[in-house]
Image (cartoon, rainbow, N blue to C red; front, side):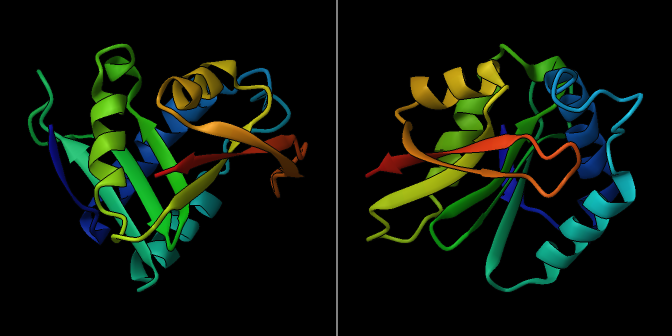
Amino acid sequence: MHFRPATDADLDELVTVQAEASVAALADVFPQATHPFPHAEIRERWQAELADPDVAAYVSSGSSGSAGRVTGFAARRRDELLHFGTAIDTWGTGLAGDLLEALVDTYPPGTDRIWLTVFERNPRARRFWEKNGWAPTGRSSRTQYPPHPVLLEYELLR
């Protein structure tokens, strides 16, 4: 896996990877017939985050059979993990674990707690975080995207 900072040149491919994975993983949460993936809004959000000096965004590429294409993405701001995902065809290959390890290594020394939110109705993602040492904090919120499903907060203590 090649892990590097994301650039504006990655934007379209990054959004495509996120959209495909989100639609597959969250079909029960965001039925596409009534709540389609908001491509334009997500692209604008990523564009703003790539320009934000407080956000560190990364992509992975170069896993088996994928030289050069974006295979995963991650972004963080201070102690929060903002975005994380991998291309559908990499699911089950170990790429997500490698990407997570590379991302956690980018947090500054002294960052004792990292946190994120995950959809309550995404058991696959919740299993991934728990398998990698993250624990639910008991706090929850709702996403800004209709139908506003519940997000659970998870944390990793280092």
